[in-house]
Length: 264
Image (cartoon, rainbow, N blue to C red; front, side, top):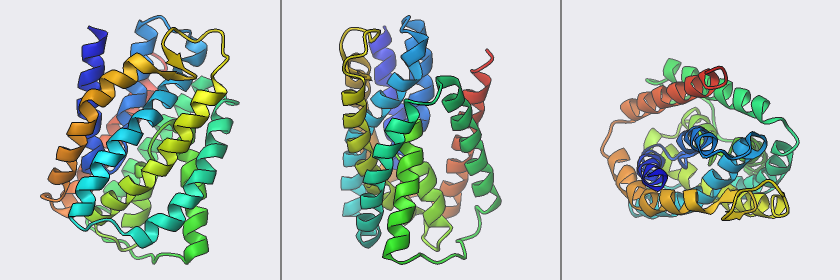
């Protein structure tokens, strides 16, 4: 029964990953936290395992979304290269930072951060953004910061990246597409780092690869890879303003859910 739930989660997260360029982590992490608690996994590592499993899943959803967005010519590859390099460094730092912070603080920060981004995007939904893109060094530095935050919370970076790009005169469809490509770099480093760092932890459940819980990953990936392709196609059929508003509402709901789950 729990495996079917993982498959359903994969379908939803994959659709959102393709639609919003977010990797699906904002949906996968909170749901996995609940699922792992129900399964009786040690509370000390529940959030770390949710982050690690989410990052591993993003590898597959990003590949599917990237293929579709690239066919539409929506990915700005000249932005991807410097940002992705910065993200590789930032994500490695983020993984090590996350393991030194109590899980309850990570969860609270995750929820508050999602709410902040959602409100910011709602207020500027009808605006293209007035800031310009920085030079190559600035793009790389931005990548380091986004990679750090993303690996810290187990998300693909799309939450920050889409918001940042749309505020710098990129239409929403191109912001989503470019964020999908950048998120792949975070997922690779984050997943490998979590697998290595959690390798010898004695309280891990069976069928774990470090902090990555393989049964959950298999169930999620079985549907997310296909769903991400459809989500990317839908993104190119919606208006930029509508897509931005939907993205903001999705972030708000996720942030509220994460904060509420700390007390209930």
